Length: 360
Ligand SMILES: *Cc1c(COP(=O)(O)O)cnc(C)c1O
Image (cartoon, rainbow, N blue to C red; front, side):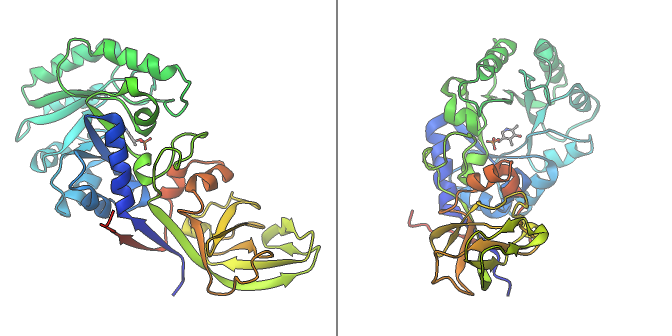
């Protein structure tokens, strides 16, 4: 069997959720959209069932998958409804949803509901993606209340630059949100992971923890370890071939890497079709049986090549960690010019398994 595989550490996931709770106080949504950032939404939701206050997902399809698996906790649709026909399912499955556009307000006005609904009115406090303009917050709230269809009206907004700790935008967005919602009752939620970790003044009654749950740092300059987070995904494979090369020999497609000394090279069964980023070039860290070495040459679809010159014991069958405990996914993301979110979401083909070490 091809040795590329992914092991998800559910005890680490719970640990990271507890970190989010401790830092934020109040309640915290565990954001498990996009199949829990590639970690398996159902397994992650089950592991967090006894801890989490509620879950956050991107769309009703993701919420229904959780309900079908027996998840009973509240689930918030972070982007709200895409069409009015979803209202019936929202009522049937007791889902909470964001209302982030005037069109979504109108949806609630024009369609009946089988039971009162919990809505989170999303304010555009400066990100300018989704959300109601601050000046219209109160009138939209009045329109929603006037429908008589609400079980509760709550408030949310999203930060555009909370991962830049010195950034004053977050403070401005917080002030904008406070002003737009002044005098209103209901719960409120502002902070994503970066807000939870770096902006205590932006904490409200609910946080929304995403990337930090998976043990990755939202910040360019602070590592997950420094933040007390534990990696949840371990992406591993094995060496499937080794060879000794002379100085001056080219490796892989395009011959982009040429040895400058005699070198021992290993081939690992993992490539961009497994979700390993092709843009991670020569020098990207990789752990061979617990020891760090580097990629050499281009990543291909099914394989990548690594420097084994200083690892004479490494041979066919030796385990390799692509990312996990020894190689932070954030380091690979940096090398590939992207963020961990994208890498975590894109792992595929490799065989997944979930471990729940309850000794923790
Ligand atoms: C994805 C998402 C989050 C979680 O963000 P992280 O940066 O992963 O913590 C929070 N809120 C909303 C609205 C989101 O879409």
